[in-house]
Image (cartoon, rainbow, N blue to C red; front, top):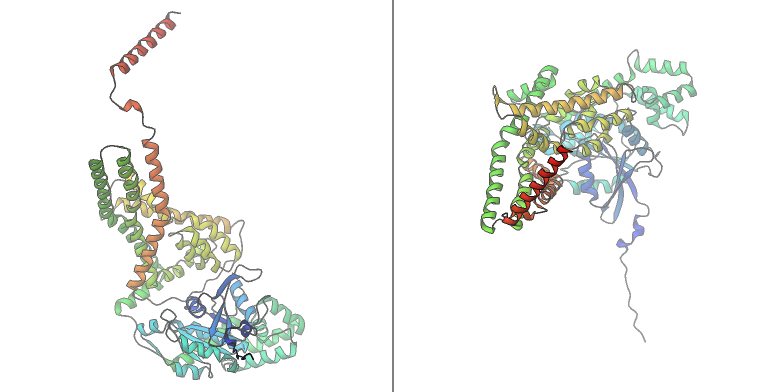
Length: 585
């Protein structure tokens, strides 16, 4: 008789447990740590593609929560739901389930930057109109504390009508476990109450959405009344009549633009929340306060911008020259030593004039590359580059672009390839194409070694006043690239890519001290990329030049024998005799 053994199969590892997997949309302002949080929550369990019919990237991943899991959709960073840009339309359409192939999320994970809580709460109030279960992740808490900002998360949750608020550090991972627990219970969270910032408008939108039928969502009615979405505004006028809709707008907004009334009402609510939950200590010293004022005023900020650029390019030559001379002397001395030890032959020449000279020709440019990127990374880490993009918005508008094109254009100083990829953030198609075509005219880091070589060869190393002439020439070449890029953009925007002038909105970051570890990691990464990409090309070209210069070796390089001399003299005599005969004939 065979004994029966009971086998228990654990169901936790069977794939069918994900059959009814819910989806949660991750949404927030740009530069809030949203993508970092997405990566921390999903790990390697993510896919990247495009939303149907647009160039906006679609990032989707799986978040494992004990015995359950859900899909997390990373939506584009936006400032509001009012705009008509591609990113904003995709964000709204995904939350309403209108994007083919993307299920409507059952909840929202809203990311708010604690250092820019005004913008985050403004977007959150608009998202509450969607009536989806919502959880808030409060990021950049450490940066807020360093800037003198203290936020009472308990009071914030109370002010938001009970919406769960979880402070997290996306980089360090602090608070992620609590956030995951909150996301696991998101189905139990009731739809959030609509803020009472504008009760008359909210009631009107709710009544109209019920009156107009299932084709209309509450957010559609809001955008139609505010005239932020032309399609819905026209559709509303056709269904209700132009005159009744105009009378309704007059009652709600008076003679003011609807968008201005909305912004004022919503920011009044936001201010009330912030006053109740945030304590802001003095942030800046007297010097810091002056720096903020200078960077916010057009003329001082422009003067400061070009002064910073000039100092950067002066440093590229002045600081790098001693290091480059030391590298050149070391490689030359090592080459001579090898020839002395191994003798004058093909192998020693290959090592000295090929390998060592090739490595030296790569490393010799490294000081200039590192000094340039050291300044760029520090300026980026302090928040100055973002303020520069806002400052240059006025300049960009003169050539038909907006400040959104500044970051890709500035990125071209490093490399044109990532700068072209960065144009995805530009919502207008014409502006995006114009920026893509103009960006390569900017001077990228790959041209810096060529510039340095030509300047060192043709421009004397002398001073003009307190400035180095070679540094001035490099500065002029960079300015020439800027003029070429802006000129190309102007030509395109006044001809083939003509269109309405775009608008630009940016949350100005606070000035902060650069993190030494972050600067070091980024600088090492830049050095590695240069040595790997440009360095390998320069090295192999140096080897090729040595081969072409060394081979073929002529036998005549040995001491001439008497036979060779006699043959040469006889040939010359015969040549002279033939010439004389031609003159006589």
